Length: 146
Image: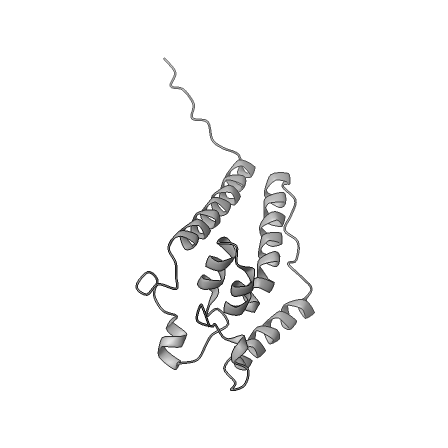
């Protein structure tokens, strides 16, 4: 009597499962942030950079930004973290590109030319500094209702 052979998924099926799992996880996190308001204290930890230094990092306000986007308030989302709003289309494009490569089996291409990556790095560092400069408070997260 011969034992049934186990059916192994192909590399493409595993890659596609990773893409789908990542997409579902992102949607789940977005749903959680939509339901559990980060503006209410005690639901999420504070930013470690803000807690240690008192300065806003480039990511400060991103949870609240995503909450406002998920609940349909893009103006408040922008006021929480403009950099996050600018980054979201790139992140969606990167996920879609990854999905396409995973399904078609195409080799990985460069994310972007080096000058683009350096520009993003310099812009992020400049944003980090500028959002902590007196007079440029509009770059930092605001309190809802303010």
